[in-house]
Length: 107
Image (cartoon, rainbow, N blue to C red; front, side, top):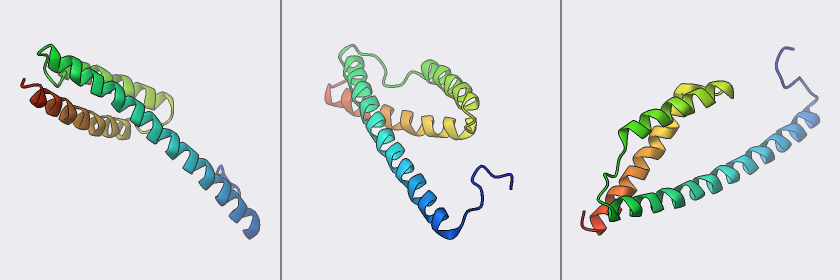
């Protein structure tokens, strides 16, 4: 069989499934923690921008980041289109936060 996961007996398959799901759960937890850390930093960026009358969005940086993430995704054998969609989702949320911070600061 050419698949990375070979055919196993049912009990071995169930054990392998359990181990893989455990790994997935650990990765999901790490992703959530990484996103939380990222948003802590972007909140600080939002405050810095608001306090210095800088715009909530930076289209040039976003363009550079998308190109960078697409390249990293390709190198990691991850679909670059997916990586771009994921980053765009995060960036939209960050901009929304920055706009709210600017509104609170009266900018």
